[in-house]
Length: 222
Image: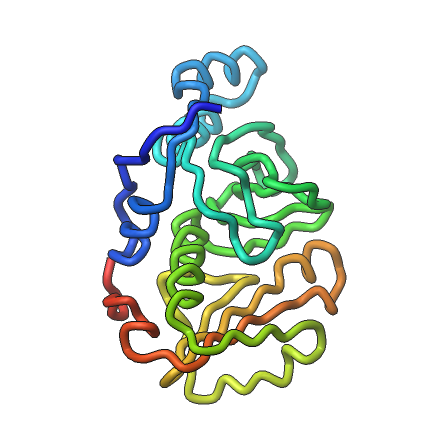
């Protein structure tokens, strides 16, 4: 596997996420966009789906980021593959698994990023949301004085009164919440995809100052 610096950070990310991708992301050699187009067209994939996958490949293809704290690290790197259809439309893989997990990382017909294991669990409304979540996790873990892990039914006991959702992660099954001195990340994707409620996990990052809470990013920044 050939690795290169990832210099072309996609737009539409917060300053914190752009810094994370620019500092920690590397580029893996993947099949060029045009090579993908020919491969998919020869296999009868509809033209509109081919263009969706090509756009994804051009924007994200080959980006390898540090592993996520959950989902055994997330996709190894972004690279669209395995288009398939159902009544909702066409799906495709966001990238191959980094480790042996019982689901695939997929992009839905409406562009959501999530996991599929017979059941669909959208984690974030967009790929950008997943990247923002990785960046925030990396940032919070560096600045928190204490990190507490909560699992299963105990997640219901976390009191989020006074917390606000972190909008840039565009959370669906997975959400982030910001309080006065802490961040809470709730991961419910595996619980939903695998029909396993006890699979929920929350990480509480405590003892954060203003920089730790936001990393210089204000609500609505991009």
